[in-house]
Structures are given as C-alpha cells and as structure tokens.
Image 1 (cartoon, rainbow, N blue to C red):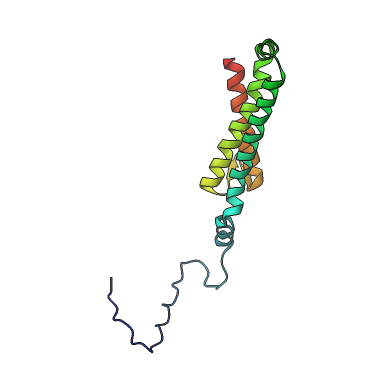
Image 2: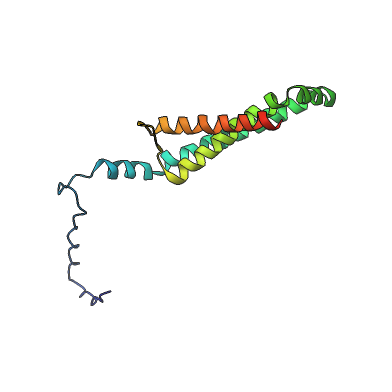
Length: 145
C-alpha cells in the first residue's frame, strides 16, 4: 500500500489510474456478460421475486382464514380429512416451490440450465426450476399422505 501526501489547498486532484484490460477483446464496450450482470444487480429485478412470494403467501393465509371462519368445525374437519392433500397439500407445495425458486433467484441471480444439449436461460430456466420443485413437493405429499 502506498501513502499519498496531502494535497495543497488549490491543487487539482490527481487523474484516476488508467483501466487495465481484463483480457479478451480490447474494445471499450462492455461484454454481454457484464451488461447482464449489471442489469441483474439492479435490486427491483431481483427483489421482485421476493415481493411476489410475500404477496402469494399473504394471499394464501387470508384465504385459509376466510375458509376457516365460514365453515363450522365439523364441516371443516370432514373436508380436510376427505380431501386433505388437495386442500392443504397442493397449495402448500405451490407456495413452497415458489419460495424456494424466488429465494434461489434472489441469492444467485439469473438461472441457466443445461441438460443433454438443451439450454434454458432466464425466465425459462426459472419456470423449469419451479415446475421441478412443485412436482417434487407434490410427489412427496402423495407418497407420505
């Protein structure tokens, strides 16, 4: 680390050091990887998945509260016992898979999937991850209920 002397009161600040090339082409325009990273770093794009998850969970909770208040205890118990996986399991699997994919998207950024020569990026990869998480949760509910 180098030490710098304080500047005199009327002196201009020193010019910034020249940028070092990072390899690849020497063109001054940013590469597509840098541009997409800068776009993903903007918080509303990444934070919107978290906002959608929160809204979906709040909506589910309100719907459950309304359902519980409108039905009598005997009706609700009979309904849940007869159709528990459909009433509780499927919506819970959808919300859980949405929360998992949204958290992964917020933490890791844009998703990219490559399977047997097929490649999916961006929203398509996120949708495929949600479908895989949802099917996993539904199969687990089916196996355990």
